[in-house]
Image 1: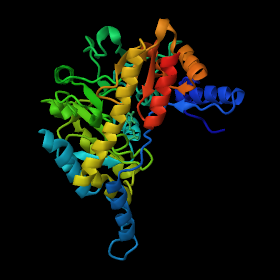
Image 2 (image 1 turned 30 degrees about the vertical axis):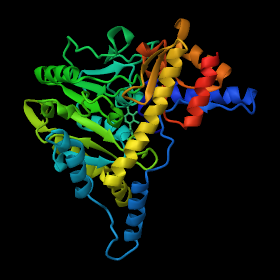
Image 3 (image 1 turned 90 degrees about the vertical axis):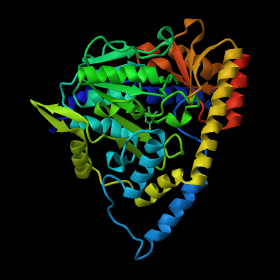
Image 4 (image 1 turned 120 degrees about the vertical axis):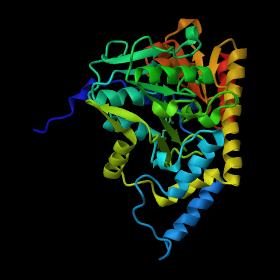
Length: 407
Ligand SMILES: *Cc1c(COP(=O)(O)O)cnc(C)c1O
């Protein structure tokens, strides 16, 4: 019989979102006709910006002509999109990132997983806790960890707690790690990293020859001008960081699929006694295993940088951030301790009376018919917290707040 990858069997059985679905299904079958409001999964809800739709329609028409038809595109993305990204997201902020250093892809979730393809098995790895589960689970799947303990922590991974005691600041480790995952603005806590904090991380990485994997999927939600949008705003970061960015959250592309990964040309890894270009390995990986994002979708992504596109995505982002503000102010007034929701579309709520995360989930589901995400699903240090997402209609957010405040 065929052998399976037994690393998959180490994954914790009750993965977060399936368990949430199970509890909702169970509740709904016993309580028919209840109007449930879902502020759980981090998916966007507003329609695609018009500029993106128009660009994609035009691209489809082009594909229907002899001259405009295109087959396989470059695995790294079309040059015009890579140049647009370089110019608008990096050069404009003083980051020296060229088009060549940008790899267009169909998602940051895949890129942040696939990057492990080009990295060795014996790296010492650190993640924050709580954490976006993808970073952890892909390390488990590829055999880079041992088994999980009861709290869900895997042997061989190190966890850097971010919680209210340390002001949601990931403390610089005393130990040496080869690989560190950072996500700011943070999912799930909504915390941001200041320029000083990021500079300390870059300093640490350079001193220890570490690689930082920086996930900036939520950079568009930063309101505070002093907060960096990219790790490459920090001097020296090109020697020690890879950045993941996505059109999913700023432009509503979660279903359309387009993202990009930035790998500086000068970034090195180690192979025995030799130094190797990470850029070349990733280029090789993408050329072999990936055939690029569709022409139509890349035209849609390019339109994000047009004048109309910029106006439309700013409007989209502020719509969600107004939701976040409504959530934060209502829950704070009702006596909850609420973090995040200022530079990120997530409110991270301390559960009342030290209720555990899943008990609070059941409580909100049953008493307010509101679905959120239990903090413990994002890691052991998320226990005692709860995430509410700002991705929903205004009507639903207001209704959900009325119900919670009344409890
Ligand atoms: C939503 C999200 C992404 C984006 O993933 P895509 O695959 O590009 O849709 C990346 N990182 C985090 C932490 C996210 O929450």
